[in-house]
Length: 182
Image 1 (cartoon, helix red, strand yellow):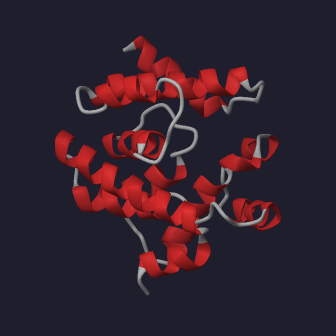
Image 2 (spheres, helix red, strand yellow; image 1 turned 135 degrees about the horizontal axis):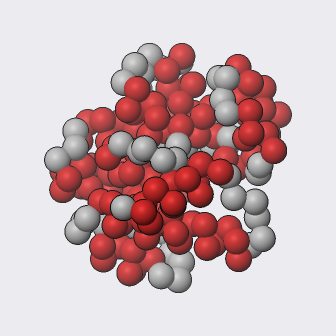
């Protein structure tokens, strides 16, 4: 079963195109930072596989995935990462824990992120279809230093959530704090 064909079935056209752009940028970032490009492509392709699922199905699979129980107390937009990792592993046979973690944490970040996890987080935020105030400054640094780019991206994400007055998942704060202390 082709992952791209499956994504086309599961996702809206615009979400599918987003996934392809994330995969393209993730491969470029991986090449730049000496990370396995095939792993970057694989994680990027799976990162939003559960994005278009309904809230009830996500909640059910979240429990099955034995995901962090705190997630249910936060916005359901965060749920597709852990559910996507479960689908990648159980339905598609993905075994690489780094790929699975990149899918799992692409919305929240976390402390102790691998280079691949950071690449997927950054690529998801900065792919060419995205447009928001400050994106060009973030894109300017994404090839210079992976940790500095991750610091800038997680700081942007937290600022955005705070401005929207939305609860911020603890993993995001832990990610931010770890990068600020470096």
